[in-house]
Figure 1 (cartoon, helix red, strand yellow):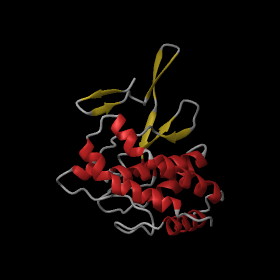
Figure 2: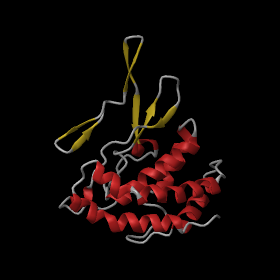
Figure 3: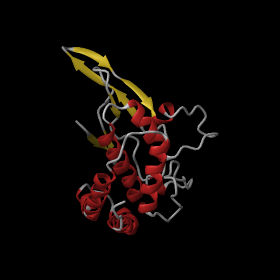
Figure 4: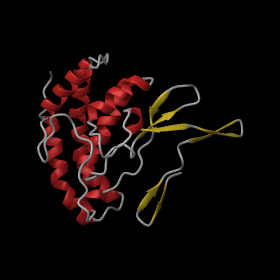
Length: 204
């Protein structure tokens, strides 16, 4: 079970399973690895690069796409700028399928004195300015160019607008989880702005 220790939420190892009393070690491959990045300092990766790679290796792309986008929305809302390709991975299951590994190394890196910059961005995303209509349109173009067979854009847009409601309740959830009130206040404006951006998303 997950547990808190000195303000950190510790989760059990997700790359181990016990089958018939025998420990089975699952394969874990970073997002940099599935996108073919060897030297991250020399290779700029965008979110569409990761999603194209996920489409090629995961067994059911549609829920992985939504989960990936949800995670990045939380990165933005909660100030986790340290979203590089080693802080995300795919998990190789015993039945041969692959899916996103559980969330890990997620924290409020906006507090870091080193002024960590957001690493992986959406095609068309500008610092401090996001137009999700443009971002989704660019993503659709990139997936089409890569011949990824995903056409259910209205489904995605509906779920992103619905996610705005969850963002509305995020400050209350943070408070219930014991997050310091100062941190909640620091993130409140970004959370509200992001929710408004998602509500402004139009059908393609």
